[in-house]
Image 1 (cartoon, rainbow, N blue to C red):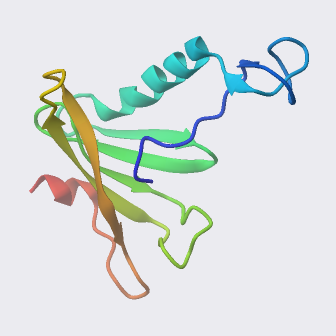
Image 2: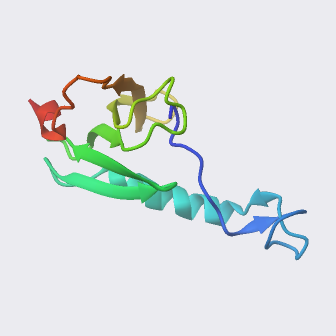
Amino acid sequence: MGQIGRMGFSGTSGGGGNGGNGQGGGKPRKSARNYDRAKRNERFYGKPGELKENWDEGYLQQTLIGMDGKAVVERHHTDHHRSEIHTNPHDHIITWVKRESDGKEHLLWGSHIDYREGQRVPKLEEFLK
């Protein structure tokens, strides 16, 4: 994924598609973008050891929360229609870095971990050990 990902929006402005000024299409309204981002980001925080499940873009995402209450790994149950790059499932290790610009911690996606034929897919809880 590399980034938090693409989002589907219902609120739009500009030409083509539905919504906005009646002409449809265009860019999502900022308020819709911010709401979706906040809702999607909830999966990265929780109780220590919690396994969160979220359906997004038609596939299951499982996010394991670490002992500090922040995500440590996320499993995607899809190959993102790119089986030459990803396996189904595949994992992403998540780390948190503090940016000097704002002093806040931000999520950093690790490269994906693929499980090719014959390889054991670990239980997500094993990433806490």
